[in-house]
Length: 314
View (spheres, rainbow, N blue to C red):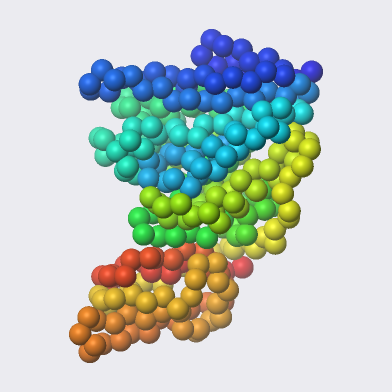
């Protein structure tokens, strides 16, 4: 028999599913904001897995991944274990269409949070106190920054063998070694012994169908591996990249990329060019090492020093 899941005074028993609110937050207009949490509890005992998206309000692809996941009948009728799904944790920033909260804070730098702190700090606190202690591991879905497209990838700590195992099960095309950053969900959860992997895919404010597909397929592989659903998704070839580096603009001008994100490149291969609007100057860009393009700047007008091409090496 599966174990019950407890949240905000409610109990979701084995074989049940429910939608509850993480908490209720009041805006300056006295508008009340609730963050929906979807709990799908299987009849048999198994792992409790968190799928969370919308940490930043402009990261649409992850929201679509989790939305697609909770619509599935096999997830609604889990065989075993428990799925905790939060399609949109940062509703306020989503309404504004911004990365940060109205006070300028990044929600993913507010952890572990405080009961009496800022809005972001209170959301972080409620997540850490209410949900994280009950899970076994989770996936936090993100998207590339403004005008940066990230090829579908999992970011985790390679020195943690359990992180690597979970990353292989998820099966994203690329896996990057990413040390913890201070005051993030991933770091704070790790202090409680909970493994959180970060999925990155696509560009902010834009749907990237391939990233959404890879994100959803990764979720299905995870659930199938732990026998929570009967069928997963086809396996991917996964490449582990231990180091990454950015190729930056040598000058200001118009950026032309010669490679698509996800492409494999050779050391010293020409990967782009910067020219000025008047046809006087052209600067060619070359790959500093053999590897894969894990991220690509889509902005045509760039300034000297801007990050243009993110390359990961095995």
